[in-house]
Amino acid sequence: MTIVSHWISGAERPATGRTAPVTNPATGAETARVALADRAVVDDAVRAATTAFPGWADTSLARRTAVLFRFRELLNARSDELAAIITAEHGKVLDDARGEVARGREVVEFACGMPHLLKGGFTENASTAVDVHSLRQPVGPVVIISPFNFPAMVPLWFFPIAIAAGNTVVLKPSEKVPSAALWLARLWKEAGLPDGVFNVVNGDKEAVDALLAHPDVAAVSFVGSTPVATYVHETASRHGKRVQALGGAKNHMLVLPDADLDHAADQAVNAGFGSAGQRCMAISVVVAVGDVADPLVERIAERARKLRTGDGRRGCDMGPLVSAASRDRVAAYVAAGAAAGARVVVDGRNDTYDADGEGFFVGPTLLDNVEPGMSVYTDEIFGPVLSVVRVASYEEGVALINANPYGNGTAIFTGDGGTARRFCREVQVGMVGVNVPVPVPMAYYSFGGWKASLFGDVHAHGTEGVHFFTRAKVVTTRWTENRRGLELAFPVTT
Image (cartoon, rainbow, N blue to C red; front, top):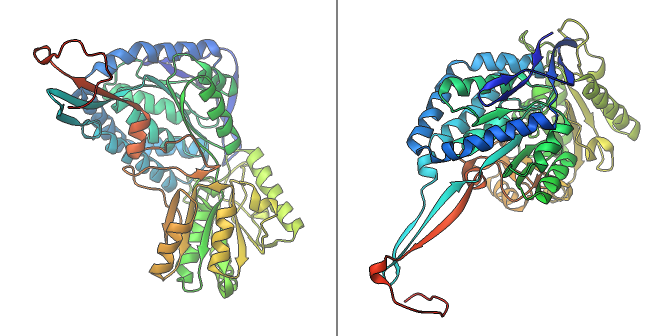
């Protein structure tokens, strides 16, 4: 059995101690074991990052970005390799995995512009014979804790910017999908990144706790569920780290009577069932306004029933859930919704699946007449379950969205520009789409939600990502030929 181990100081670290299974979700078969790091392995990885930091921070921007450009070219040339690894461990279909890699590569391209992004300011003669300038410097060794649903894209949201800015990295991927991180580590080495700048520690809560408390870690980036994001934010902050912790979501799609219903139905299906609903930006609630509900539900159901679910390597539309536990949890939510009075329009629990073995499948599922008190509405299901909530007006729909504790992404479907503009102003959500159901911003804009979807002040990638991985410094300069003698009063500009 293959053992997926760690990557420390430019080399794979032989596995010792505990391991956990890695499965192919389409077949249910165990394909490898992943090493679970203890505190000693974490210490070694952080030590490698700490040792490498001074040299990498002092490396010129020209040389750092040259490595980034080489990494980008290698990633572009070999993206199909990485997509195949993602599909084998996560289960998403190959086209979806290729899209994940492409969106991650956009952040690498953004980070290639780091010389411009790190430019400071300069003020000549701010006071008599005094100049002031500002600069941004790397913070030190940083930790990235990434989720199972995007084994490549989510780490790529963070580490290209961190590395380009002069930091060193310890990545802790999900133990369910560990191989993509090791593949990326080898690619960095091929691109010429010095040993110790990028390290990978596989593990579970023991490894996470050791990283959050380690005194040499300067900052922590996390993506995952809201309960764990809360824990990471509180624990790492208590240990003096800078933290950005992106949490869960319950994304709503508001459909108005003047919307193009065929387009809205297409996009609800795409955003609700893509990657088997295992996206933090998936649409999980369709809010149907007025008389639009019946025809919209009919159109969504018609499309959902045509989807082929199965092994992501067979050209299917939708793949499996990541684990048997996920499958069982999603099925239980569907049952709870039906018991609470929701109408199961399309039931994916008993579909036929194009796969071998005993994969972890739930097909596309559509629930109508969902009420806000039901668990299928309140909880983040993280599966291919689309709930339809009926409201009487635009105002009622916006109030419903704003009352939800999550605030990651939302969308409005309408043909009225004035209403769309009003929605963008009024809705209390971090990322908004207008006739776009999954409004994931480009790399040069920030990614992040509001309310219980983000803990910390700074979003991922874009200029906010640059600011997270750097610290500001301001230098005030006066040369000795302009000295003014003893002057004990607080300095003022003159």
